[in-house]
Image (cartoon, rainbow, N blue to C red; front, side, top):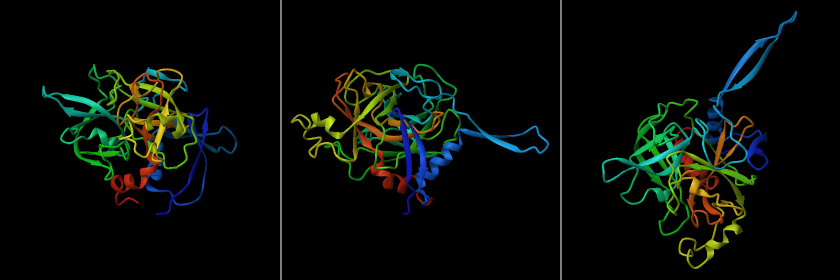
Length: 316
């Protein structure tokens, strides 16, 4: 497959803007990203008042909010993260319990962590456009799960290849409150910060929140997660932190993925208006809440071929 190469400039470590693009054929996930980006832009035209009127075109961005550069366990705003998903599991009282997060990446698929699909404990519902679980919202919508697909090399005994796809039972109708995120396809991570979002429901400790939270995290070299090489975690990380994983968190305070979901996105903003997000990682595992050490995220760019072969089969 011929692939285009897109180069981003990351301003202040968080907002990444496309600088230039080599004129090679884009891969399908990049072409889909262009389509998603157009969902947020309305192009209008005006005629100049002159003897020879000319048409001037301008773009009007329709996304509800821009993302603050500084966030830390704050509540997300309405429509701020329109790709955020929640995985719902049947509980003993015949209700749905939302235990993992995910990211809408197409009209039928949600990207999440493989550890969210354990044995017979599988999600039956995906909720989109949710902001506050404690109130009924006109924008929220539930989809039944048609199929779950774990990466074939994932093993629950180790923390590698922790990535999965959830197929919805019907197509999603995109709106300004509900639209997919893009996938980061470059093997290079040229940002120093990223955002994690979710409802604070993780497998490795912490409290829960009824409201969606956002937190800004620092992206580190893998060596910053060297604590995972200790005897206590050696079984999960027999090879240490590898190239298909991202080490991110905060060494200064208690910001970590207590404010995000297992399976939820680690993302960056990729346009100045804050309308387009690229998912760089998936919340996987870590030391726990408030521990002032980074956590591990699955590096999405390492699995682009696998994702594309399932999500856009026949579209390449």
